[in-house]
Image 1: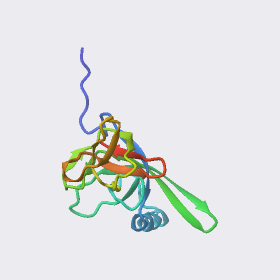
Image 2: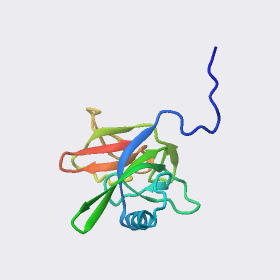
Image 3: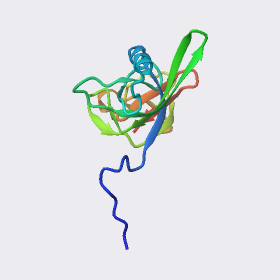
Length: 156
């Protein structure tokens, strides 16, 4: 006999849980929420292009890309920083198209590529092993860019 799933019992499915960092604005907001004892988990976020694996608090009427499911605040002297576990469920590419986030793949980046965080990718070269900036014809979302090792992490 099949088991019936109850409705409204929380998140279900295959999740893409990713460690991320907040941008400066979101970090200030998190500090205030923490000081006030206000819940941080459940906060909706959108991806940003200021740093690798960076997010910010979702604005009103924005399409959210994920939600905070866990966090850790660390201290170094008087300074603090945040690590967030974000359950990603969407991304909006450089062409303003929004897609479901299903995986993150690390890929080799063409050394001459002008790709940036938030860009889409296309196959580059005849060996079919590298990607470059996809501009208006690409797919995905570069969430991490390592130009020293010519690698990108791409959300698909």
